[in-house]
Image (cartoon, rainbow, N blue to C red; front, side, top):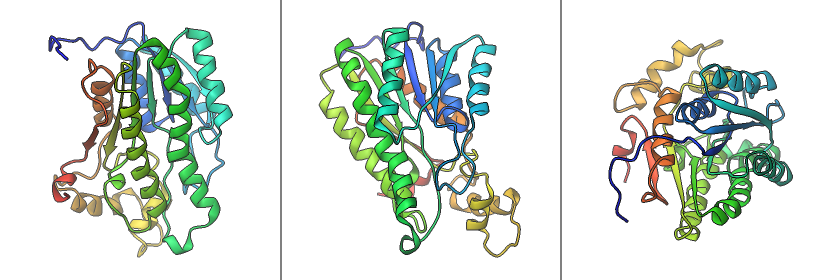
Length: 283
């Protein structure tokens, strides 16, 4: 496929759905797509009902994301959606199609993280992790592929993790979900390869969001301290990073998401690691 090499980063006229968009990486991705001209539908569970070791985003967070995008001159709307539920995802996608007539971009970003040795994990902890991080992505892909196929165009980007490229102690259920996402997306890329649809994965290393910046994570990294704070875990994160940098900012990942969304159609089935050099130590 020949391209001019001068394709503009212009998403005017495109409609994007971003899951897990109320805060953190999702908010950054939504803002980035809106700045490029897309109409962005920001979806989030906006409820605390999971086994994650930290509070999830609220409806107020979701509303704030929409307000921020609109204040920046973008077009956005918020939708409460639990990706663990197939019916909720189907309703969300149907609503996007009814209101906007199309869905061009999916950024399947909704995810949770929690720690625990595999022999201590409960069925509920496993089900929440797999249900959100893997089954939730499946629900989204299954819902958006038909309208994208009918339109002859689609850009799908799914958030995995550095944990999707290796094993990690006390994160077996999280790693399993993130490995699974990669196989799922690569399979979808093959199934849609001739349909004008691309499907890719971003694998960030640790990102400075509430998923990491919380008491549960602090205690996992520093169990020797009675009340560890963020400053107590930074040296550990810096030692883990080949670049000596503790973590990414969400915007660092958003640049990669935008690159994949605006690709002319030659990148699909790819895993792009945004990882501060950590993949250099792996095969």
